[in-house]
Length: 412
Image 1 (cartoon, rainbow, N blue to C red):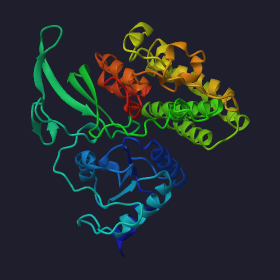
Image 2: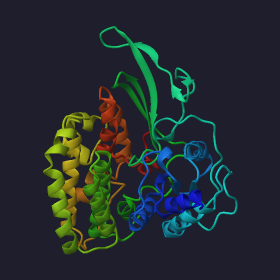
Image 3: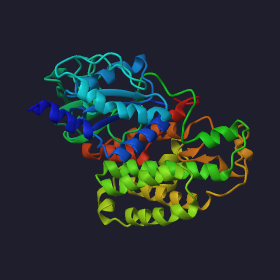
Image 4: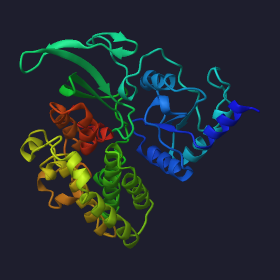
């Protein structure tokens, strides 16, 4: 009896997928997530738990090293596919079971990939850190068995405590695409935090979520309903990611399914009947409130000082307050899905723009030199400093910056 072959076929039937999104590949990510949901394939939390590495976007030189690190950390048999366009997602995912069954144990990556699939990145002898990023050279205390060594530093009481340097991202599940956060830890508390994008920079086409406002700024005809549909989907996406990080998988999955329905053109009446119960469930959860209240506080005054203009400014508070603003925005956007009036974005004359609502995208004003997510990134280190490490991902998820907005921004 071919026990190994049978086990391989079982694995190929429902392979755990490590999904990595490259800058500029939001549409591809959404298509892959929908495909995984249709197939019932689970998402893996780490390379060690994954059977397939699915990359949304087209890898280039700057991505090779850290993708290779992820690939190295996956046990065999394993498969690697890329989704260079949203329309290719189904074909690429269909190739995963074939690759898993065909790969000989202990052998190297298979040559001659089918359409939509590229050869895996070369295995790198690079130790993996949180999220698959392994930049421990230079300012770190060295590596032992693949883990960064602790240094010593004074805490606020003058005691010498272990100090640990870690990098979060860029391939954590439900993590903002293209983001790396370097933190310095003492005990379980973040003492310092710095944010930086992955090498390669933001995409030339800008943000998927800001597309209606970008098109309107170029003089193209765009309705307010189209903008509200994209805003609603963007906030459902953020809520889904936040709830997934918080460990609330059921509502997270519903938020993503509704996000896809909104983007797919579902009507307002159809959506309201499903969105409102989700909003009430999340907004009324005492457990979620207890888990997220008090972490990552961002008062309005501090938000204004770094240029934050969107929901994070309106929230004037902590992670829970920011999620509640998203929920309100989702309901408000639903009421405007059928608004046929023109979306008017005057990028050249922001001071005299009368219809200010038309210039505000999902994360803030889209008509200035400072992109909304650049301002959110400027605020993020302050939100992380002093927070417990266990709260870091929740804080990041509650801000959910879109680094694709940074293309063409006048700051950073």
